[in-house]
Image (tube, rainbow, N blue to C red; front, side):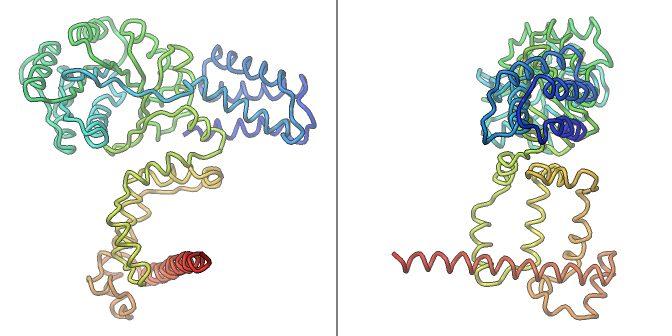
Length: 441
């Protein structure tokens, strides 16, 4: 996400490298390059021009401190303006009501139905809400079945009516059932079309006026670039939605939609979605996205993702095992599972400042762990607990059972032993420093 834009902006800032001060000439050259970078990212010309004009005004009005280089000052100005263009602050959705109703709209293929499932899981697991999904896409044959599969996967009920082709009636009945059963939130999945048309707009407008939802969200495929912004404007002119959801952010997107939508429709982006996993839904933080675009990483989001998978009881037990040097291959396997739950490995790594750029041309596949997992699971429980007993014949059996080779098994065992020593050393050093501090008191 945003890789090309990040590279182009970095090259733009290099124009100021070595300059002693900000002047109209070097700023003009830098701004020209930034405008090209934005246009290449599929940002509309009007938005790109407005952005660059604001950056230029701020840059020329800056008295650069002696401790701050012109290049650093320009990076800060661009960062602040990027965040401002995308909305500055994150905005939560309104889920109040009896029940709260979220109406989800968008074109066919934008990822509406998958987003409905992700939002349902998010509200259920993170907000503790009792959620119901309403299947109101009565035109696409697989839409209702898809929603039911997702509902079963996340253990959320799905309301649908076989043979009924009136989405307003289905939605009303879903809300009535939710109210009777004490459900606190209903998420309504609506029909989409391949393009904006009057029939779809009439239907979604009728749904909104009938349901009076607490929140109306427009879902758009970020990979469609500037078309996403045009579609958002058409929907907003008719529907006046509350916020935008950008999907498929893990795809080949240039980032233009994220940078343009707020400026064009003046509605906040509230969520970004990537991948098919139901957990892969993130609140949109403009400042953090600006950090990523400018190669500063996003450590806060990385920590939050880690905390979501953090099991305090398991962590305490693991700490005890490390202190006693009882860290096993099964513990190692469990740690891999927690890392995988956090999301795409390359995306996670890119949140660490400097790492994203280093991994730009490296293919980091989430399936990279499969060989390691297969090797560990081909061992007996005794071998996983006591890898030192794994001799030559056992290594051959493990390699055959996991579909790998003996050198791969040897490499894993060597890496595991090295990891265990480092972790043991870190624990011992940490304990020693605490004891030393205690004695000094």
